[in-house]
Image (cartoon, rainbow, N blue to C red):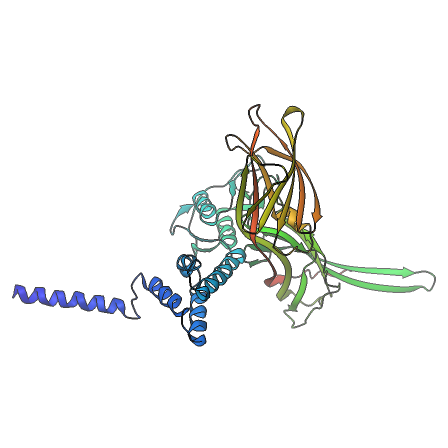
Length: 434
């Protein structure tokens, strides 16, 4: 009888394992095996099979990254070419994606939640500063897994805190301080958060005494604030947002009352927040809200950052890494530990528009013998045929801080995209003059 019971139990376990291998319960290594099969398919003589493999690997996304990195050095030219193309697409996806976090469920202090959120997304969050305390209390999130900005806003909303960027642009990240969070209409796009801070409706009457003619005008403007994660390397943005659609609760479609701006502004490395405005055709006074508002904002960002260190440099000698050529033109030592360094940075990467972006996406550092960075004091730039000429002034903090290593931080990826910002149920000012 006991043997029979053991045999039944063994058969039941085997059946459970069989079920685990079926579609309803795939084994944990199923994605790894599938990626391996698809990479093998890329060697096929069949164009259809290769296309199927590429589509399948792209759909798997980050799960395929590790094996694609290995395949990027495959001796088969078709395999390594397609693998490298897919890796670039994955890096592009990373560039424009929001930071993702999985926070603890149940009652947890707001401070612990924000600290874990910062750690998991690679952002910086300061809890309180000299201008305000942080209100730490236990809260429970509705959805503890999600995107960076929506989680920050939920933590603040539930713990009676408000968030802002650091007043000191040299300090990265956000500051969270005690205070009831504002009720701004908000829209998210990957690493970007847009808020409507105010709506301005103006009725104006101008009386012309020459003709005793009265002219009435009615204007409407939205004032916006754009913020982005400090891990997101924004280097340029359209000076003006573009209206894609604005529909009131009465069903009226509102056009923009100003032309779309095509000019670009360069974003400095310390910039994490911008204020903008948009003028619309005035909504009817009977409208109570914008049922849906869609804006587009042109952005240029860089990613896949790399570091290029040059020690014991020779003036005028080209040093190369990836597609980067770095030439140290001069290093001049001044009084009181001051150094002026002039370098040329040449790249195969297409020169951006506006060209000033190259001075924001490339960062030059000077390190002493112990690897400590000298403090940057100033920089002047000029564009050359293939890249940038940068003259940077550094200040040593210690007597022993003689420069030993020149470091260039540069992007392997640069991309332009229109961020689509969708707002829902935006309240409208409804007061009318007497």
